[in-house]
Amino acid sequence: MQTFRTEGNYRDASRLSIAELRAAIASGEILQATALAFDTHRQLRFDLGGVRGVMPFTACAEGADTGAVRDIAVLTRVGRATCFVIESLEEDAEGRPFCRLSRAKAQQMCREEYLDTLEPGDILPCAVTHIESFGAFCDVGCGISALLPIDCMSVSRISSPADRVSVGQQILCAIRSRDSQGRFVLTIRELLGTWAENAAAFSPGETVVGIVRSIEDYGTFVEIAPNLAGLAESCPDLRPGQAVSVYIKSILPEKMKIKLVIVNRALGQNHRFDLHYFLTEGHIDRWVYSTPESKKQIVTEFALPACNRA
Image (cartoon, rainbow, N blue to C red):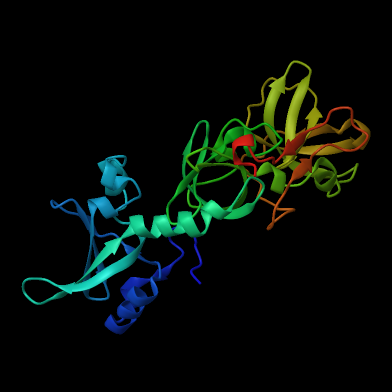
């Protein structure tokens, strides 16, 4: 059975023999290799262990055959690991073998056999491909892209997606929603723990590293875990993203509040918390961040849209 992965995580075709390439054709296995050039015939070229591989433009991505894919989306594959299925092993006019490749077919297989079976609340592995101010685009399989919006990256406020993830990073996400074309919107904050789960790692009297997230008239919000922030005194000379050390004065579950005192504001280094997942697989129907005693309730409902319900 084919296992679908993010691009860059398939078997390297450049290390395979002719016999192994033929076996991959017979089984329909998805492979990968580094795209070496986009030539004047508008095709990507590869070297598959001494055998030339060619991928016509229309086979470079789903939608390329209908004009929905721009040249730049293909040009940027050069120098990068690119997945594909081998459609055929042929000979050119001079009798030299070459492989005809299709990334579009690999993506179609991934969508039909894997992505189309998923629904909101399902957890899946992703890879961050690029970052914009409003969120991060992620590969959810064979280079198929989905958006992880900035407001779905954590309960704590962040000013940039780069505060939470980086290009090339392998992460876990849940499907937040899905549109009529099957495109996913992703979320990660539900995997990073509730208020109580995060607060359990800290105790009053500790001094820990924090990251300034916002500065208000009434105080400074400092993140001490990806899904947990506390309030310290107002410090107008601080800036969002700055690393500080903070003393934990009190933890109040009934109010979902952590009172902090800034101890050192001159750590002189950048800091970003590693993602710590409390959920790593399966499905979520409903997620409640808030404590039972809190008046403020932060809840995510992973309900199917009415149009997708049976």
